[in-house]
Image (cartoon, rainbow, N blue to C red):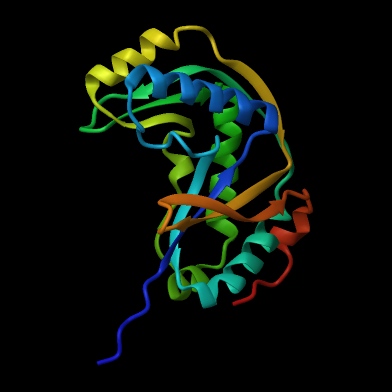
Amino acid sequence: MMQMKRMSVYTLVISPDERIVGLVRTLKKRLQQQLGRNYGSVNSAAHMTLILFLAHDENYPLILAEFKRVLAGLAPFQVALSGFGEFADRPECVFYIQPDDDSVDIILERCKEMGTNFSKFLRRTHTDKWDIVGRKKPHMSVARSLTKSELDVCKELLNEDFVAEFQCNAFAIRKLNEEKGQYEIVDIIPLLGHEYMAGQQMRLF
């Protein structure tokens, strides 16, 4: 009996600049020491997930080409980070850094444009579990898989304001390395602001 090949897990994300990546890494290490354990996302570089999808590796080049086409039509934008937030209404809590309202609006608009312009045929035939995560609550996780008491520790330890800005000139695609249990960046796709690319150029399918 032929065994079905497993799909890989991919995410399209916003990656901040190295300065912010370093700041978030320092926050995570402080929490790791305070909590005394390796919580979810402790080793993950700072990012904001926009889209999560499953795909067979042999189909990834087609998906990448379509992302390049669609993202070429999106213009770079400024992201401002403004304080901490939490998801406490779930069994495993999340502590995160939140973008300000203007940045949220821009990210939601970019997610909407991608949902509109990405080939629906390609998405239907070459991907699975396509989820535009970024249109729900854009955020940059600091710690995931926390208990309620651990969430309280996060809020007490990181009670200072987190205010920073960065220019988003590209999105990154990450792939889950199942052996390591970590996502790894496999491609960086620039935002070129070529409006005709998303609206006028014929799609791949």
